[in-house]
Length: 209
Image (cartoon, rainbow, N blue to C red; front, side, top):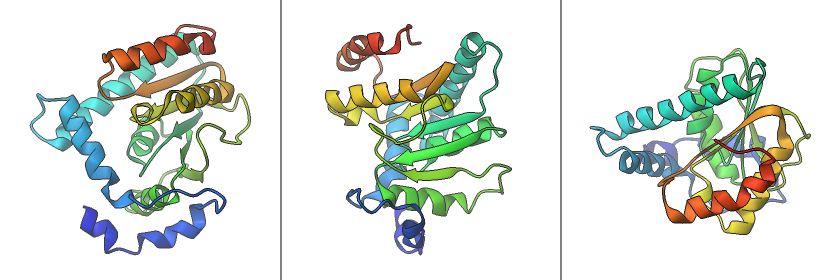
């Protein structure tokens, strides 16, 4: 998988997604194998990395649908933002689950986005193609109240607390009333993550689930 990416012309995609003022190191070819390895550790009963990823993402998507049905007031999910989308694994799952929605994958790394856009060309055509955006998840520059669902998938464990708080504030700014903020991360029962999330509840105005 890594060799396939490195030997391809994937970085021709770079000029179409890169925001030149933002600087981020190139480590994109290893992102997908690393994500699948994390999924395998999170679902030890799975017999393969692919099976673990399917279970992990399936549970995540089910919870998103349940939360939206309970809190959206019957409004369909029409606009989705995946912050820290990396090479687009979570973004593509969201697009497949909500085929009528406009889906945006946003990341600080243009290299990740190049891989995401390159791999997207291997997928069947979508009625609404995924939009890949090079921006900072703490300050996206996107309009307020413009998304029904904001996803942060396997990102927060990588961030210092200040960046996490900023990203959460930005997520709430972007959400429409009744929208869903969906966070998935490794070891959600860890004391570090629980304390961090508990300290952020006042940012939401309402409890998170």
